[in-house]
Length: 152
Image (cartoon, rainbow, N blue to C red; front, top):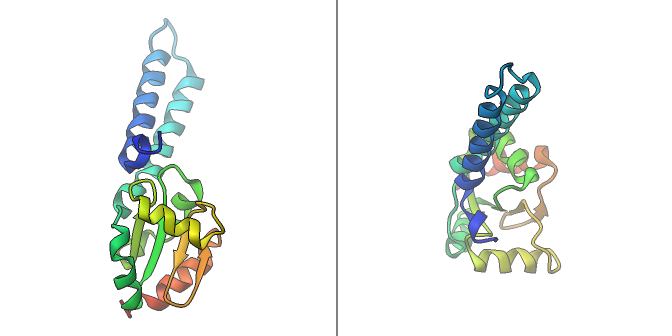
């Protein structure tokens, strides 16, 4: 299942398809189902929110060490993780300043995250040459990325 959902675009497409099905059902009867229409709109907004993960993309774990040596910031993430999506949204103007690694696409990356987080695949995990932390504090992560953006 992990490999199936490793592609960031898949969740977005599935949510859009679900919204379309619900919307079609809303207009299928003699009257319009307003709740279904509102639910479809909410799904489409969510699809837009999850779509940011396609912009971040995924780099191979093999390039992490070189990126860290140049003073860069690495974030390990996985599709569907709401904390990851929130972090991406917070860093939306700085997505290119971060080396994003999808742990569901790269087994070596998943192993690295487990090694950093006491055996757990906890994401988003932010890594620099001097610190590692689970980046649920988005403002702290933003500060680290802003500080290092000029160095990488």
